[in-house]
Image (cartoon, rainbow, N blue to C red; front, top):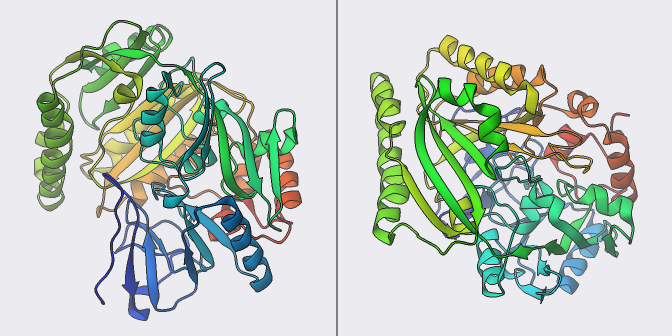
Length: 483
């Protein structure tokens, strides 16, 4: 192995390194927990710089790595790729666990294409380049007295990556981030730039809000921001029996609610918050660092490594982790939504109808008991409102989200396959940016507007300029999508 050049984003990010043929000797056909990150099936086996995602479970060796700074450069790259017959994919922070960004063609690093272009405080409309990370967009919005209506608990993703995979936050009153998109500039497979919105090319706009990068290259995005607000947050462990008995009240009577359940524990760490204009009452910097960075990341990560080597320690770790002390504070919304996530895990997340959650969760507990392998990383549960976006996980239904995790390096196949089998019984839809084993044939019946999306895909990218092995698997080939 040669020395590698590494370029990490704050707290996360992809990196590049030189790779030899020996490192690329295997190409698994499905996600696998065996061994190091391997190249996506179908990518070329050659020496060169390898791109890896944040989870280090996906990698690829692109023919060309580009770092555009203008829309004109984006267009030129796509047109060059059309001449040479290469594919094109873009990456932001690399925070997807699926192979959605991998390519053996042109890989576009959008780190330098990440500016806010326009802010209208009177309407709340904000236009930004596709590569801007959510944490920086939130900072710039705050400077204008604005905020994103909802965020997930991770804010490292680029805006394009977040909306393209259907990233969501907690709260049954709020839809995913893509629902706040009001307009976009989308570059088609031939290099044509299309402005679309609810008024301009509405059918393309509807599909591209969660487009998996398969409809074209997002250039700019116009988001509907809201006046800045604070959140009064309460984090505390609660008995699972109480959570399940009071579930509807917790979901409906909090603006935002979710919890982390450590498998095998009778407790869960809950986080609920309500919107307020009360002045901020934040935790001190030292207390925040101690809880969120030292305890939740460094100490917990070290404990997971101990449990991986000495499995009997897992029960003790789970017991301690699920009994954190309670916290009550008020802070700026984005600072409450997002928390540092430094521990390397592998994740699968499914959306199911809200009403299916109690039964599905009970079955999940039985599955974990049957596996026997200690699981030290919690299951995260959240809820969000339905929407009308064709390939959104919440399309047409209010949804419960169940996210299963395994500590990086631990075998996850049995666990994740078991989770997926349960979720499929409820027409579960996998998060596009996280691991799953589905394909176009199994997914098509779960999305009422599947055919409409496929028609737009064929129109925008008839030559498959933006395809890769992942989209081939989950969407089918451009002209062969299930109907």
